[in-house]
Image 1 (spheres, rainbow, N blue to C red):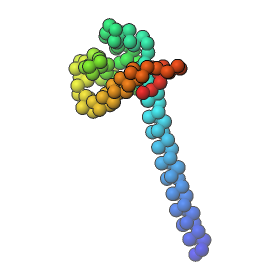
Image 2 (cartoon, helix red, strand yellow; image 1 turned 90 degrees about the vertical axis):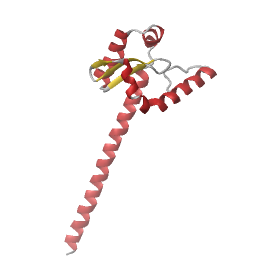
Image 3 (cartoon, rainbow, N blue to C red; image 1 turned 90 degrees about the horizontal axis):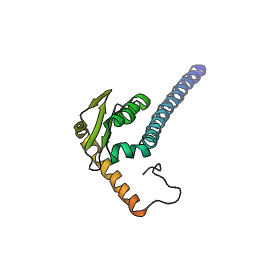
Image 4 (cartoon, one colour; image 1 turned 45 degrees about the vertical axis):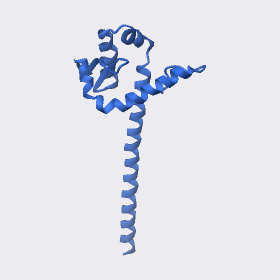
Length: 140
């Protein structure tokens, strides 16, 4: 009888330990992927060249190749948008197709607060200037 109780306890403990390990692996995987996406977004969206082709004079071909296709093929983003300084759509890619730039209005309600926060932080950074060693690659 003692042997059966011991085996039962061992089985229960083993199941619990296995479940906890699996949950930890899954959570670590999600966390790592979130960090990857954040890093990719920052490093790939601050190119100096992007200013020339997206802000100074909008180049839709460049936006397609370097934003839409790049993020789709290299980062597996399902959609990408380029907004102007007034948060109006300039370029959109949904899946592997260029979409009307106005389609960015479909996600506007979901990202409006994020855009407000980023714009406010941009204004603060501009007001205080940059410190030695700080670059636009430093996330907001």
